[in-house]
Amino acid sequence: MAEDSAKAKAWAIFDAILDDVTPHGQHSNPWEAGGYVADIGTLERLLGAALQVVPDGKTQSGVAALALDVWVAYELRRAGFHHDAVWPRAQAPRVIPTSISGLLDALPARESKPLRDRLEGRNPPSGVVGASANVLGKNYIKQVDVVVSAWDTGPQILISTKRMDSSFGKNAANRVEESYGDAKNLRGRHPLAALGFVFGLRSTAFESEPATARWITDLLEKLGREDDAYDSVCLLVLEYGGEATETSPEEAPPLAEAGAIEDDASPLDVSIVEVETQLSSLPTVRVRRDLAPATLDPARFLQTVVDHVLDVTPITLHKDARARAGRPFVEPAARVKRSD
Figure (cartoon, helix red, strand yellow):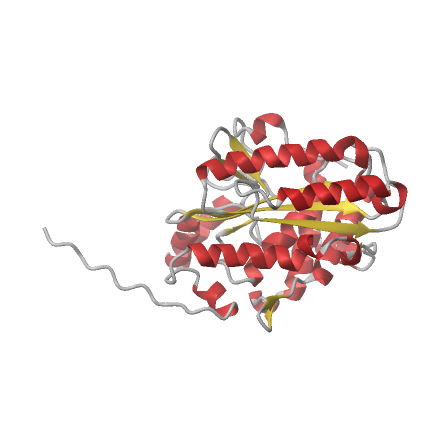
């Protein structure tokens, strides 16, 4: 299956799954008794959808890791961050500046419709919207998987995701080393942003290569202890049937990683019948939280990320996120016009 068609098909199924758990666009509150409760059921469905589109990661389509991105972005919207500021968005275009989406919302329908059609169509203006977010770090531009950003605040959350379903001993060290370098690069320019790293590891690693699995776990725990790297790290142990395929990790094209070429934000049509057929027979994927240490648990990861943002921003920002977390919020004072 071609890369663009695989991703288009995956996005259609992902969107349908998220529509099921966000009736009328309303997200459930993840906070219970002062603690963050992650929606693991939705994560497992998204992972099943990725497996349905690309069984056992047989192509380098990026679909397998994309399921993790979609879920993390969904959780940040559950936490109360503005839906347009969380990238990838829940609808196309997946990346759009909040200033532009705010303009579209403010315009009368007759004026906003042609603009929306252009931005959401197959040939949007280059550099205005995108399928992924490129963020300038200290030394180079990095494609970041999940971002919360706005014009007036800059990047506030920067989360990278990686996934490994086979060849554990061969590739694990490289993936962790690359992630450490990326964290240093992003931290150098965005010291107050919440930096996170999510690593998906197939559960077979704990059966076929237990020493390697423990080593990877230890590396991830240490990765979250560095003051100048990640604020929070998560290990998702993924259990599903079928034979693993020998593949190299999914990577973006080098020039896209460096911001030298534009990504393709053009959506492709996928029929409703096809989506419903896929949803009716999703493979079963389980997240084995019992195989990951508490320090790398997804709920802890998400709570740490959200708390970090709310701790380092003024009490006048992130109204919904503060309300959901049970934190106080103060309406910003009206700006006084300066007289000449």
